[in-house]
Amino acid sequence: MTDQQIIERINTSLAEEFELDLQDMTSEANLFTDLGLDSLDLVDLVIVLEGAFGFKIREQETVRQIRTLEDIHRFVIDKKRSLERTA
Image 1 (tube, rainbow, N blue to C red):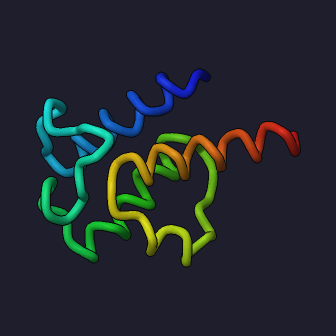
Image 2: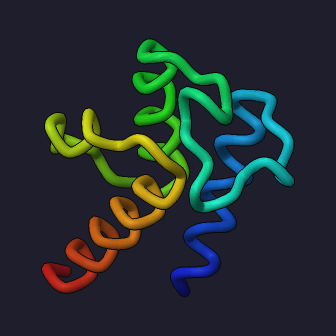
Image 3: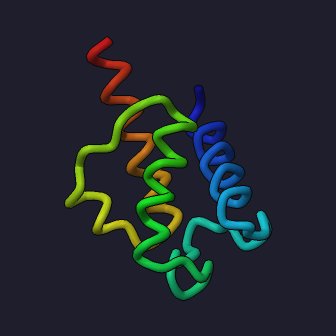
């Protein structure tokens, strides 16, 4: 899976879960101020990502630092690459 495919899957999954417009799903979009998510939505976001990519997200501190879509993209791409290296 390419980085672009990962980004597209993230954006589509989040847009469906949170009823967001894909046009608003830009890398620099802030989850809270631009996309209207709140801290409780982060729990659902983790569940959506785990379902979309088939891995558990245990880095709680890292997840708490996520503020933009680019942060999510980078996190998932890094996690996916890390898992591929250990497989």
